[in-house]
Image (cartoon, rainbow, N blue to C red; front, side, top):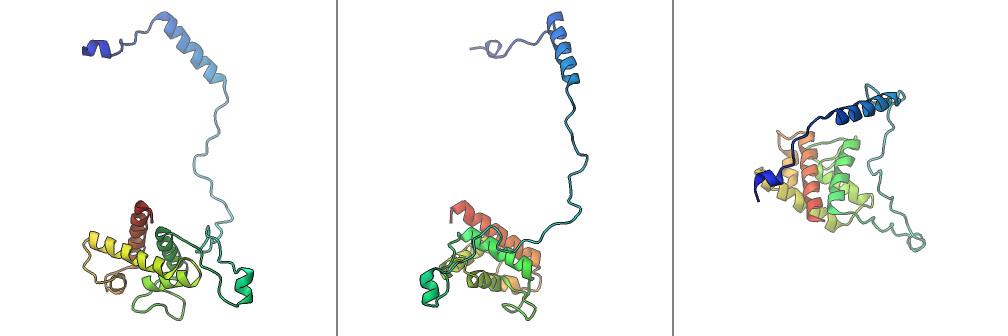
Length: 178
């Protein structure tokens, strides 16, 4: 087959086509214009604060849990969700270095993971697998740290760096389906 057979013929404007285009343009001009805002709408009352665990069900104790006075079973979350929740917890309560948490409630990376676990989201295995994903991202990005905790406590590390690490590890876990 030649290229001439595959390519469509060039458009030719004939008087009939020109009249049809003019008729369509005249019709479209009679329609009301769509209402478009020049700027996006912003609520004058501000935004509402969302809890760090918004979108995830709270752990609820069953009748047997209440009768035996044991804690509720943890809410199952994926590794990606656990890492996102840790980042959201750190955003809500603040970030610190050199300790799990301080007297004001700020947490380090491990403290955020422990807090998510303590609030009933995931299991210790979830936390461990999340830490593996954090280490994988640290190694893949060429950061010579022995653990995510050492990365958190390094002098040049900022809170944004920790959130970025959590986001990348969460995206990696999501891509792996875990």
